[in-house]
Every structure is written in structure tokens, then in C-alpha cells.
Length: 168
Image (cartoon, rainbow, N blue to C red; front, top):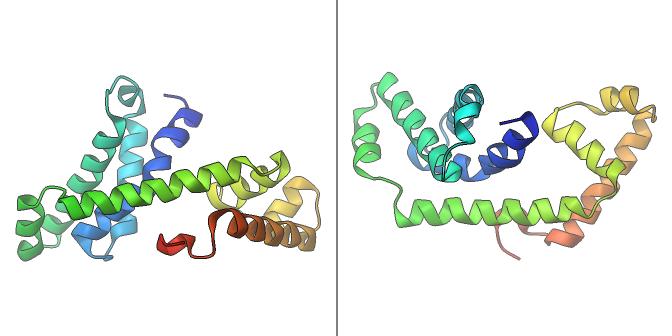
């Protein structure tokens, strides 16, 4: 699996993976569990290409990582709940809703110009600040901030103002 395939397939599942992690860890270390899982999946990326259901594998991998973290912290009460409670309907619905919101965001991002897409990728995938983006692109730092502000406004229009909460 190439880097682009990994980003488009596995990293795209990050919102759903985070929902699963929050269900088990109740926001304690959920982001760490997702990041650990992504690192593990990156190492296994050649095998992922041959899998029938990469989504299910990724969600199960983050679930297993959460259980490992609970074991390591000796939190037996949550561990028992996690091992007896496979992804419930509520947890799965939450993961599916996060995936739907992410798909809607991807569609909105696809409507941006190539330059805007590049800036969003630099800011959120590569996690670069305005100064670094300006240095790389040759734009001024204030120009980067202005363009990003316009991108946010455009995305808010396309997604609805309550997008992050999942309501519109």
C-alpha cells in the first residue's frame, strides 16, 4: 500500500477510530490509542492491501489497542466492560456517523482549488504553522492566514455551521 493509498484508506478512518477509542477510554488517552494504532497499521500497510474489509480491521485494531492500554493501567473495571462489550449498536452508530461527517468533509475539500487543498493539507496533514507554509509556498504569512480564513468560511458554508456536532 502506497503512502497515498494509506492516507486515503486508513487515515480517512481516523474519525471513526477515534469514536471507538473514546467509547473504551472515555476520552482518556483516546487520541494516543488512535495514533498508536495508525503507527501499527502503517507498519502493516503491505498486508492491508490484501484485506477484504480494511475498515473493520482498523476499527478492531483500535479497539484492541484500547484494551491493551486498559490492561497496562490495571483498570479491571473498564477492561471487563471493554472485553465483554464488542462494538455495540450505539458505538458502531457513533463510528458510522463520524465516518459520514468525514465523507462530507472530504467532498467539501474536493471543491476547493488546488492551492487551497495544498494549504489545508500542509496545515492539517503535515501540521505546519503559517510561518512554515509561507516559507514553502512563497506567500506572506498574513496571506496564508487570510487564505486559510477564506477556506474556513467556504467550508462552513458547504458543511453547515453545526458540522462538528453532527447536526445541521
